[in-house]
Length: 263
Image (cartoon, rainbow, N blue to C red; front, top):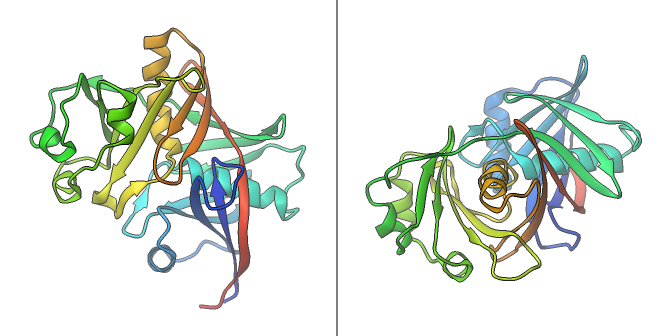
């Protein structure tokens, strides 16, 4: 079958920065085995698969190794493609029907906004091997329903981190969020995200991690609007608005390529 496919850099306004995502649009529900094969072929941290459904668009996300329950950057990329291709009017909100419930996207002041669930973190003892894997001690460790969060002493500790991926892979979690307060006035906090257990050694910009980072830093800094910088090699900016048990993520996107899958 011919499947529409796009590559989009998310959470950036500059090509080859932010987080690249595949976006595949089909006319029916694809076979999950096929979706996993496509995601493995594309090798992006996530590929989004879309088809029309009653009440919105069905959306699923796959890493090169597995399906995931929540992904911010591929959702942002999917919304961008639907508006950019004319499949949805730019004045209309887009309801995405996902494994994490209905997620809504809309355009606000030229930015893409996503209404996502907040993912709280609870303090926990550091998992065995975490400090050795990171090569750093932590001032706070916590666990969400998906990930381990590790707060390091300083922003430079996060941005200069060179973790042991094999050791991180052994830690039982989808991924490891590493964060610290920012040391400049431009951002409120910095972060990085490592998920070798699901086939993503380092994710360049992680929307779902900011569903935890937003409430975590909002409480500490007494803010309801925050800006986070994910200081991966590609780098990306995520702006957040805290709204009770929801987090509004906003960012930009750049279309890199469009075409068809022939298999």
